[in-house]
Image (cartoon, rainbow, N blue to C red):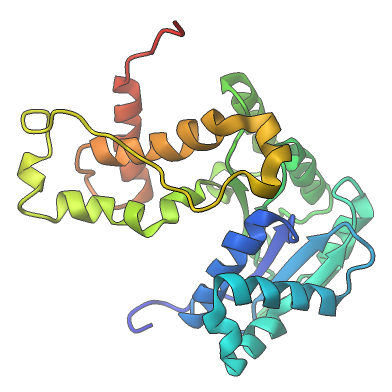
Length: 284
């Protein structure tokens, strides 16, 4: 893309590569990024699998079928699919097995003297600490030969105490600047457009305040149900899965003041002000 600096080659390592999050969200997102030249051809997409029956061609077939369902433009273009397929690598092993992390270390590709790596934890939250601890023990979080990033999907803990405990554990192994706690709901087009709709629209911007707005309703329309995620919902429930993460994030975007810039920290600061203004709701 014109005017956009080319990203450095990176080893994109997906823990939980055969899961629902990877199939429906990560793989289509990576395919789009590859189509927009945001991922260099020298990059690698390394899936971590526990099942020893998986081979590289199994992983490639899995990615192909996932993209056929959720991003068919890639597989319908033979040249694009060939480019994506050439990036795919596979590492077999259990998350609790130290030898798996040594095999992963050997699988990382070095380009131009750098071994950049992004570790995406698309795994149950109870495995976060074990994965990061083992990455540290294997020397995979050392940034002497390239950057290292850890991406964590919500839920980040199941209450305030567990979230603090998890943060403290992470700080033993990585710097705060290496950690990305993300909520994929914020990537939806409607959510992405909220700030532009609010702050760049000369009609709505001066009216978007309590003097002219009586109340706001935030509704979620899903085209899938619990389906095969019953095990996850048994532990989390809709309140934790949707409201305390996705919808409260949307609420902060609706209610926050204009940030001093679109820098991530500036946006976060305004969102935090909204959260601090929310009155606690009594349980009764």
